[in-house]
Length: 114
Length: 114
Length: 114
Length: 114
Image (tube, rainbow over all chains, first blue to last red; front, top):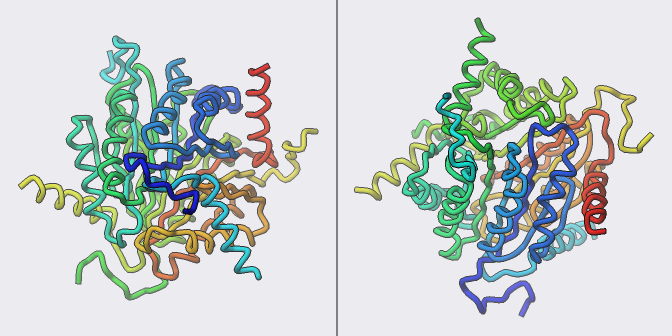
């Protein structure tokens, strides 16, 4: 059985998300604020990777939405105008898409180069 | 007091959201699926407006996130690969931004034309 | 022939876009900046509608991308850190999707209520 | 002079973008289509990194928009309904933000753990 296919718990909705959370109105240097939101995501225990435009997370839909809301509140509850962009890719039965999706692209493109 | 400023309940985090929820892999005509998700949003009681690319909603952060998750589950729990794009603009103390933000732009641009 | 289907010019790639352009670091009130970008879109001659979270545009892919870049430059070339979120729905042969997509949803949902 | 600050060519608008391009209506397995669009980006010569939800690119605003349009056309001109989500972070005078932004977050968070 391919590791990325585990249907046992059918209520589990595997969700890969990319999220970016930032205040507006606090100057052009946003890293110290963005870091507070990313810290919540890193402390969530969900697999996550940060790139220059977002943090990618993977987990059950409910866990992901809870983590995103918690990370958003860290800034919004300090009274900052807070912007969030969130993108979800939900596939029941799948696992470890945070790596598999990229591996698959690399495999396809290297096969095309051969 | 400007209607769009009501600070009484300070835990209320006014959130304007734009959300788009659609399945992939179910053919190019997506309206019947998208309509199921929008129906959940319309039944939520939150102010909402649908345009060609998203549905705009306004409410407290918690209400908005709950409504988006519920609308997403309508498709994802049928087993469809489901994509969601969500954008939030959170401003404590504000109200009726779903209309005010557009009115403000129109006021500014008509003043520039005079 | 349904008005939204006109295949004559097959190089025409009908594109519905939702775009939001704003500076960061210029305070929490962004309307005067956002209005400058929306003015470029409104002056483009492309069908467009502004809602609280974005401006929806329709046209050929090339026209839409040019208009978005021009609207973005209005702020970025003033030296502001500028954020853009853009979503495209491209369907060759379609027309007037800026209205048709919403009408279709309303038709489906009112039929479900009957 | 910090490598990420090079103001010589003031018309250069440093842009970090995250882009995702996919067809809808072609089944749930999208990798072979997404790979065609990513190949255009990789062949562009612009610094780029692919994660599970998008490909991050860095370059001048004009180069980035051209590359995104070219990658989009690879699918759209085959007649597929094509969806694009694009996010831009534009900062005149900056360079190598594709790495610097992530390093800064890691530095801030590791300093908070100490």
